[in-house]
Length: 191
Image (tube, rainbow, N blue to C red; front, side, top):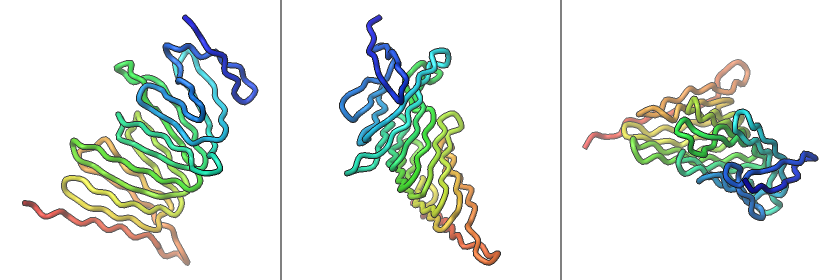
């Protein structure tokens, strides 16, 4: 099988074209997962687990952006660590992402309907658990078939993405022993 040599962080990796992320100038494509707008990166490959771990840093103009359309997810941040691998159906997927500094997350699933827009200092996405954990000055606007949700001023917030309706766990920041976070959940009117 033909391969490409890739120098990443002092490591020399052989990327097999049939399995490895495809590399274009300033973009990485792995199945339908696309990572763009990075200035520099490091990477390593685990042959036994069939995974690729990348650490990417923003370009001077824009934050690093990862798009995983099959997982309904877009994440932008100044620094991004991504683990790419294969699903149980042997399809390329984003298995995990850790985004830091100036994080913006968008999630839009059509069925069952679920949408969210969030900002935080750090975000961790875990595909296996279908969770998104947001940390540091969290702001979230979310919607599903039954509710609108707004969360502000939380230290940490966990969103369970794979459920029929969004489940959110919020951990408020504290000032002088008093919680400062705000969580507003508004039921939608039934038609």
